[in-house]
Image 1 (cartoon, rainbow, N blue to C red):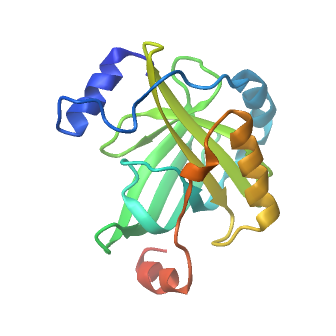
Image 2 (cartoon, helix red, strand yellow; image 1 turned 120 degrees about the vertical axis):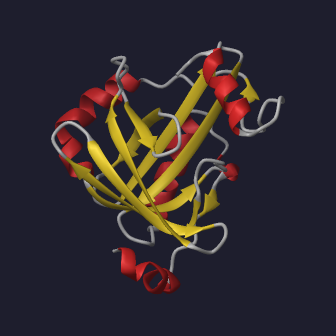
Length: 197
């Protein structure tokens, strides 16, 4: 995933010959993924269950814009993901994906949704019961990179102390937290998504 070929796929995906706005000069931040992965592997089963999207950085591949609910089912090796939400067009949308150990042995997950390409999925921090701070960064020949960050919650709301915990974690790897956009959640979600849950 760290090659010019991925950049070319991104350019083709947006249908233009210019570099997409979310690909910027620079390199992915240095993260001790091995330390994180070693600590997380024995507890992976605790990551299963429902995670609501509380906030994310702009992401052209995230088709769900409101009421985003992700259910992770762990089979002992990988997670099957079922995501539901409301699209930018106001329609209820359901997507399926997988979260699995990186095929090249890198110490993180890869995430792969239908009609997208696989991307790194690094759990920077989680207590498994309240919040998860997730980061994905792809480097292109050490000259450009694109990154996407997420804050997940076990419920549609997230206590301020956990929001601040994720903010601190992202700031520690120099992610600009002003980029985050809160994902709308609320009573309207229960009505709109009822038939999918």
